Length: 312
Image: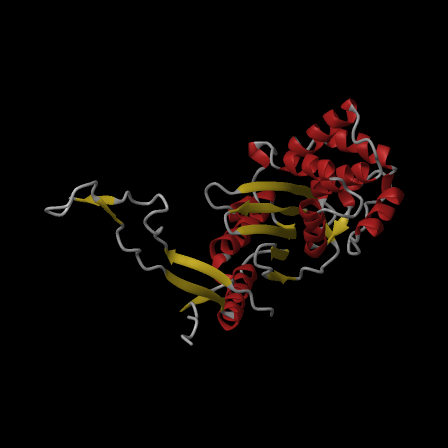
């Protein structure tokens, strides 16, 4: 792991004369004429400490967190996989993150919008913008049907996935966009493109998608949002669908971005064979909460005094 040195000023006081304190005026000495003598207060010492990455502590914290999540998931029903990447620290964790047969359900609606923007030079028309807002913010299925058709259906989506580098995602058959299968790793790849750019998407395109994901209506804002601290920004899309032909179970998924001071977390948690939608949501939020609470501890540092220049 490449060491990153971060200089932390734990105590910093401006030297007098730089606007921190006014100079005082001493009274004139006896027998001398003229104005008083300006006297500057002595400069205060500045203490400097270095924050040094602690790879051993980071590896231990990461192992403990993944162990604790694995124990939690062992007591939950169905299949559960997840992946997480913090763009600030580079920390990555996951379990089954390359499992690529997880149903997205409405999670595929972001894919549809990104694919449409990817093939357009002039952005969305007014009508398409309205459909996109309803599809992402309200999870409107009819809006998704219309935009899936405009993209060109599953064949066009397959080409889009290849172009954008999502090798573990397969579009749903025919008109059934909700049958799209993917992996947590691919959900994070898609989020990274939206945050960092590239792959034929303009800054305006990416802003359009992320802003809509930040405005998902409140009753659909569950899931990976459980990883957020007060004040963090959350952009997400969730999916949920009954699976009557698989023992009457449910597939429930959530992926998104949680960003705030010191973190830019991309997170995807996907489940299937759940006994109900509520159980899937509870499991997803349990995983997200554990990651969000302990994320800062995955990149620990130790402090040392700054080196001093030797006196010649």
